[in-house]
Amino acid sequence: MLNPQALWWLLLLIPLTILSLLRYRQSWKIYTQLGANAKQRLPFTLRHFGKDITLGLATSAIVLAMTDSYWGSSLVREAHSGVEIVFAMDVSRSMLAEDAPGQRLNVAKTLAQELLFSIKDPYVGVVVFKGDAFTALPLTTDRELVAEVLEAIETSWLTHAGTNIAQALRHSRELFSKDSQAERIIILFSDGETTQGNTREELRILFHDNVKVYAIGIGDPNGAQVLDDQGKPRMSQEGEPLRSSLNPALLRNIATNSNGAYFWAGDVQTVDQLKKIVKQNEFKSVRLVQQPRSLFPLFTFIAIFSLTLHLIIRSWSWKSLFGVREYQ
Image (tube, rainbow, N blue to C red; front, side, top):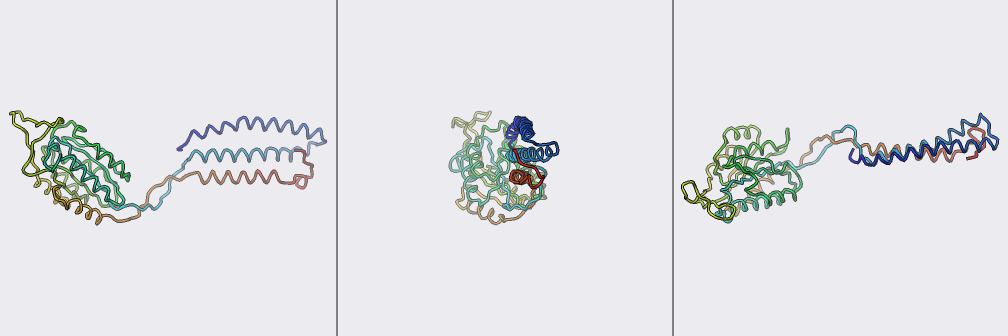
């Protein structure tokens, strides 16, 4: 029931019922004064309450229809895009380095948004990771919402230090629909500087579940200084400026071991190649889904039937039916 507030309208039936009873007593009193006898009370009562009951039933049905109630469910065929995509975004401190060109994290977000708006029927989720990972957005078809989440991503979203790509892959895998026939793709945006986690075990599961990982290397193998939130170089415990370098070997290994592919963000062809891959995996399929069965048609039918019956009762010639004269 999506609109239970509508049930308050049923309270109107209380004064209407009282009014009907008072009208019945008053009308019968007048009827007897005009010469009615006990035998004529039955048709009189039937007509009086028949009209009021059918009108009340119609009113109740209209109110119940307004509640948008459901009962049970039915299987329906639903067309959908045959690809599910999870953007796994690295938000470790190294993503603040500016060798992409530009800040690595900003480049990753730009690439993800460009790819998002190239997908015809997106069904996309977002995972962010550092030393840990969490779901920023479950799978959704709301393109604008995905774009807003991508734009808002910052390194401050997670406090766990380090980079745990294995956790990112696990969280991404768990977002996909269970027993889905759709192609499932993880697009990993990272510089590859992982410090934690066992990617080998997670890759084994991904391969078994036929989940492909397309890794996008962000940064430069020559490296760059890691900056803090104020744009100043971060220093090591030894007092030396921290540097971060793209690790394409790790990302390529992750991609190839999941039947995916590796791309470098600095290649102008990267987005176009990813678009082609997504398009190749897209297909329109039909799936059976459980859909709640709305009671609106039933209540509408009851309302129409009751109103029709109400009008019939009002229009009948009770003299011809019961041999009595009408005084109402």
